[in-house]
Image (tube, rainbow, N blue to C red; front, side, top):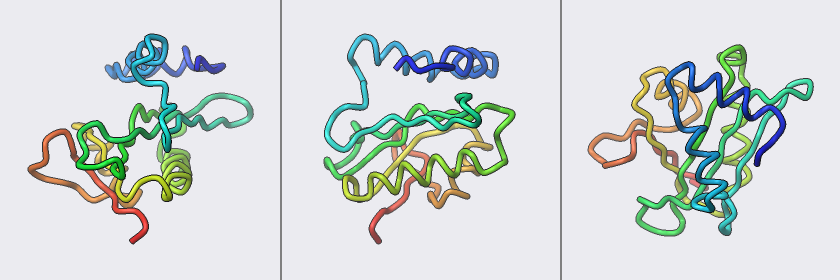
Length: 139
């Protein structure tokens, strides 16, 4: 971070009203979250060299144990949504981290994003603070 094309992706996300790529950049530069603890990672997906999606996984700060991961700062460029790009990135991240985490949670308040995560195999979670969706790995 920063990666080529990140600013354009960040600007697009802001125009949609999302601030989490601004948080990603701020946290990265102030050292709050660099996705560098054991088992963590930040990934990008490119099409013909252009950055079209980004997302990461951390040890879940709200989880019950270090075997709980959290999908974070996930964004897919609007022109690439509903084309399998986002699912490809989610699947890749989960596959890379099955040895690190037993389950992965996330929070979204957006219905379309929630439906996307269900299509990726996550289950909707009710009544758990800061968790809207969760997937069990290695089961």
